[in-house]
Length: 176
Image 1 (cartoon, rainbow, N blue to C red):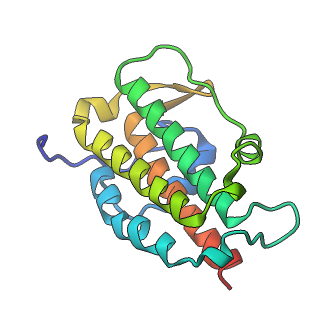
Image 2 (image 1 turned 90 degrees about the vertical axis):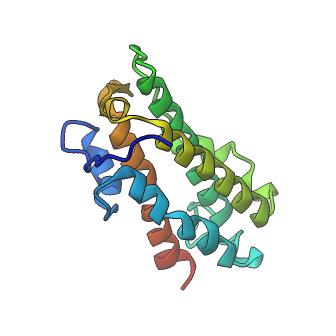
């Protein structure tokens, strides 16, 4: 285990402004604490959603819960990929992605809910271990994603905040 240090929330300019929706949903001031404190949410909340709710979409054209969960898995993988690339000092701008195109092509609705939940848990465990391996210097490393500057630390907060955002949406629109 690496030396413990305090890594504050990212400041404006260290990530694209549209990601503030996610960073603002993280209450912790340290990225490692944020991952640690989200463990129960990842491990318990999604298990509590019954399989019969998984194909539900709250309006025509909106994602089903399965598609939402697959989106969360895909986004987490992409954020982690960006973090490792930037941590390793990649100089090229990393590509963006079209979340709706990914959801449409995910085949999530053909899967069972439990398999998606298990995949999310596995991906999160991998992401948390990755961020635990980063030093303070690594977390401060900056690169480009979708032609915008972003730090490794910001990507960690974006990852945690993205889950919080979608859990809020699920509670408000899917589990009424």
